Image 1: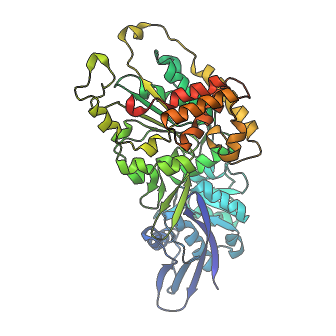
Image 2 (image 1 turned 45 degrees about the vertical axis):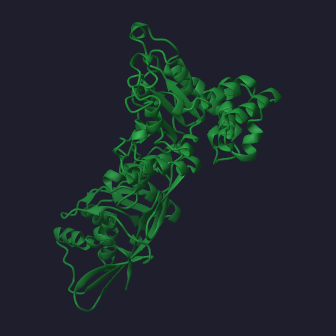
Image 3 (image 1 turned 90 degrees about the vertical axis):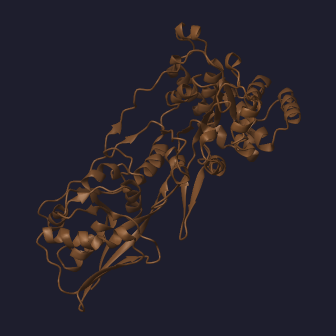
Length: 504
């Protein structure tokens, strides 16, 4: 008789149910695993055999066949060890078959039978809840999976604990959710001397999730400004925290099962590969754009990134999702992030500094920023020139509003957007609005429309640029607490759009 156990196979952030069928039959002794297993899954037979031997359980001299159904779905990862062991123990009548059939398991087995934590416990718990099964996993992964709250999670230390649990000798207590990580100490915006226009742009970008481009000489404070952006953003909502944590769970980044309500801030180095930024590689893991979901992706030295990597950002920035295409699968990850890019105006960095004039101006700047294509540059809502700060200004006392003050205004603007889009769950900020919805929420008055049309005609704005100006103007009005879109809002939005980064 065939014994059944259940686990999951990961496709992006989704965990697909997998049935583990185990048959012990007469024939030439052997242990085979079928159903498109990868190398790690195929090697599970040796780990399972060693773990059972450590428990003084000898496999019979029979033919053991493990089938992972559906058989045409690729199976990857070491988390298949535990469900294979459960199916085998049920087939040997050591564990009750009916209880194992009501359990969804994942976990890697050490040779001594200990359970090793694996990534993906959080999405696995979501699937277990949908399938109305108990989730069995390593104890170190139990705190993470328990955050779902819709299914019973059992965290075991070893395979011996699992056997004793099902035998009724020592029941495993359900796991409790991990601790909510306290927010880290964030840097204050008042630490930045001067740069009032850039600070204003940061506030607008944070309020409406608008993409921001900072161009300035080396040492002018571009990275310093970007590092203070997390202190301006509101905390993640419960839904956003779960979405972000599922991606981080797949990447193995959740620390001790804890979940953070602070929005992610990812800053990859400019030598990062396309797979690291977009996603892919072994197991088609999520890249930086997905790890920054609901947060910020800061790309310093933007033109230094490979051209192919920069061009692949064009679609994720627009759609909020990225597809990792493989020969046998197409995996989609969410990536609704705010792109913040920083760049020098030219190769030497001093194109716009009158005290240290670039010897190859203007060709140096055109060649350097020319690495960023026009279509990609068109996707930045705000383009800011960050001028150098005079040495005399560094001794001045802190000026401007603190991060807490700006964050309060940003939170108020976000609340207005949440009320505006309450009946549209897929839209959360002004940056997500498009089509008729954008026309309804960002209808300028006659004076503002005339200004906008004249600017569009004079500077040759694209249709995308026109709509992005309306989105930014809507955010500026939200920050001011005004419902109508007036000329000052449109004029300020135009001022950020018409400063071309290539002319900075």
